[in-house]
Every structure is written in C-alpha cells, then in structure tokens.
Image 1 (tube, rainbow, N blue to C red):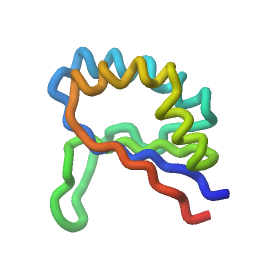
Image 2 (spheres, rainbow, N blue to C red):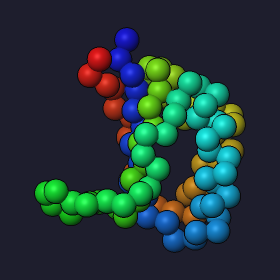
Image 3 (cartoon, rainbow, N blue to C red):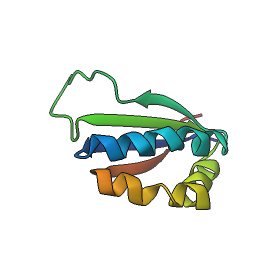
Length: 97
C-alpha cells in the first residue's frame, strides 16, 4: 500500500493566527500516523518560480490515512484558522512504494 503525501503551498498573511494553527496541527497529524517531512524552511528554485513562499509536506502510512486526517473532526476545527491566516493549495499524492 503506497504512502500518502499531503503537499501544501502556503502564503501566510496573518503570522499570529498561523502560529496558533501550527501549534495544534502536529498532534492531529500524529493521530493518523503522519509526520512532517517539510515544514517551511529555506527554499531554492531549481527551475521555474515556486507557487507560494511556504511549502509543507506531510507523510502518512497510506493515502487513506491522509484522507482520514484531513476529514477528521480534530483537523476540521483547524481549517478555518489556516484559511483565515493564509491562502494556498493542498494536494494529496500517492507515494511510489
């Protein structure tokens, strides 16, 4: 069963509210066996322009676990905080293995 990866491309416009979101997200991710592979950090473009200034990559044991995290009641409570503090895109991608 391939792993599931959630990739976020984020542009934060309210750092204080986004900081609140960031404090609660790790526990919700861990509840579904997920972990952060990338959480912001310095970015260098190798080709083209990055779509947003902040990139986040989460790894889950399966696509199903990633979907379960995103639709969970715990994470659904955090979505309005993220959406109020930032704009961006989230994608769920199936891993190669």
